[in-house]
Image (cartoon, rainbow, N blue to C red):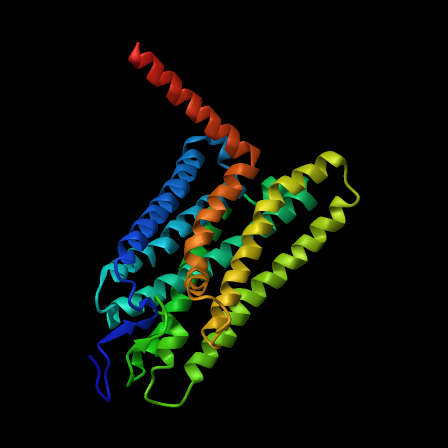
Length: 318
């Protein structure tokens, strides 16, 4: 499995020996994955079919829901395979592909949340110029750029990591993490890991978007303080799910970065496992629930679709 110059596979050591509980964990993981696919797909279909939702905000949401499916798919199928595995071994190619998928998911998520904050800023602070600034064509191009830039950024980072010679093969996690794979290097040089932490992990992925989003919300708050009650309610309705999603995602990324570098012995093992996967398990289900419940237009579109389906079933049954 390994020698002094090359490692062709890795062992995910955090699974341990779970015995017959593996069938319970597999079932729970499968149900959770199906729930993520169902919840996000339903909202994507609703946005696609309802022309009233063909607005910039809902197009960004559609991209966000696609990314949730992409993110959960990058981990959960592999997780289910590893739960049933006896050796918990993963090939180097599959490991690097998983790292690529998870990191592009994180980059696209932050990029989408950032541009959604700008969308809310323009809508609330510059409502008369909204349709001129954010046209459907511009929104589609912005979404495409976010995905392309994320893929290129992560691809460049991973191209350096793949070249590193590794002398060890045990990853103390339930999935492949970039930092932990770099730590398996034969060399003591951690330049790649440092570049990843500072440039990709901190500046581009987290600090930059969070700072910009904070700035937009300061501007939104200043406008809302002087606005009517109706404007305040509209701002609260559209901004709450975005803020909850952002706070949840920042927490997940921060926790992941911390636990990869420090041993949190006080955290119970099951909770540690769940929190380590929070970013690609809880987040993909949280977003469709939050936006589906809080945004009135999506609720009305969903109710209309359910009413139509019920009417059709009634007519055909008669």
